[in-house]
Length: 242
Image (cartoon, rainbow, N blue to C red; front, side, top):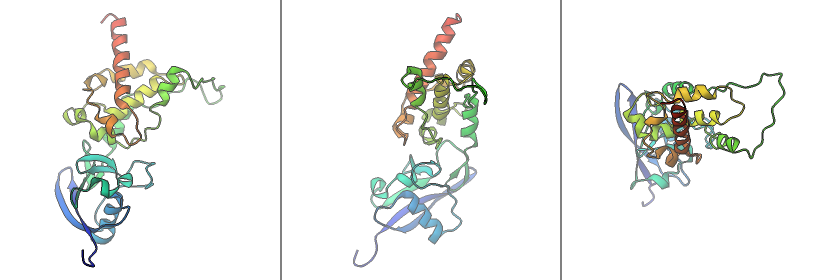
C-alpha cells in the first residue's frame, strides 16, 4: 500500500443487553495477529472504555470467548487471517447470554444451569476414607473422562439454537457435566442427575443439531453426552412403567 501500513476494518459491539450498536475501528494489520490482539489494540490505543474479558491468552481458560463474524470462538486462538471477510471482521459478545457491557457477557445464567443440572460433585467417600480403586479402562470411566476437559467457556452454549429458542433449556455444557458425573463411580447422586435433566428444560429438549460439538474448541462431544442422558432417562421411565 505504497508505504502505508495495511489496516483492518473492525466492527465491535458497544452497549449492554438494554441496547447498543456496532462501532467501527481501523486497526493496524500485523503478522500472526489474533482477534484478541485486535480487541486489545482497540482498548489500548483507540478507546480505553471498551470492556472485554480475558486471562491466559493461550487457550486454557476460555474467558476470551466472543462471537467473531457470527460464530463463537476463543479469540486468543483465532487468527485474523482465517476469519477476515475482505478486510473486515465483526466482534460481538457471546450469544444467548446477557451482556454486562460491550464484549463481556454475564455468565451467571450459564453457571446457574450448570448447577441446576446436578453439576456439583457429591463424593461417595469422605476425606479420611480410603480411596476406592478405579480401573481407567472401565467403560463408564472412559465415558466420564470424555467430557472432563470442559472448561466452561460457554462456546457450546452460544452455538446452541435450542438455547436461543428456549430460555429454560439447560444447555450443552451443563448436560455434558451431568453425563460425566452420572458415569463417575465416585459420584453419590446419580439418580438425582436423572431427575435434574429430565424436566421441561432438560436433555429431551435437545434437537440434536450438533452445533455444540462442531464448535467446541476442546474437541469434546456434548451432543453424544446429551444422547446418553436421553437413553438413561428413557430407560428409567419405562422401568417405572411410564
